[in-house]
Image (tube, rainbow, N blue to C red; front, side, top):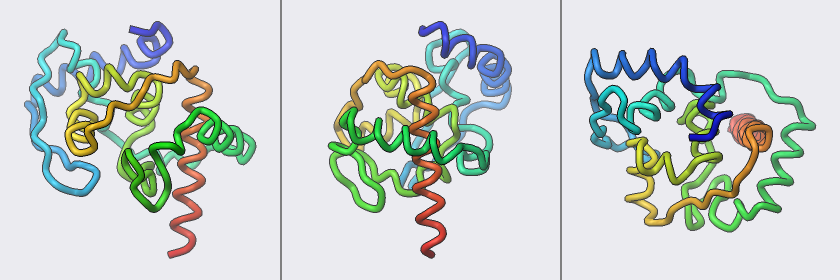
Length: 165
């Protein structure tokens, strides 16, 4: 596992993995609001490391992210090819990103950006999205700062979308 991700996620992953084992696994909602059966995450399994990523406050609730960082995220979104599969307000090849920061946590979004191949194997939400869209998101080998800039761009897009309604 990437040392940056491991260092950032390990303490929380251990606590949440134990909580998952103690409480058990329930059903989760997919991007369309439908139920998606969870995969069992046993302590020490690869799935246990990812089981907690979509638990907790949604990314939009963080309320941080400077305009300059959002602009950098927009540039990455366009230059790294994200817009070939994703858009805001419409489905392309991959999921519509409109409202993504209201549906997912910061940790989940960053995990999906930085380690999509691990997420689809070990995270039930990511696996369910793969089943719907039948396309594996490529690993673009971005840095954590790039993922943060993209997340900030998504937050700004969601805020603009909310302001229109």
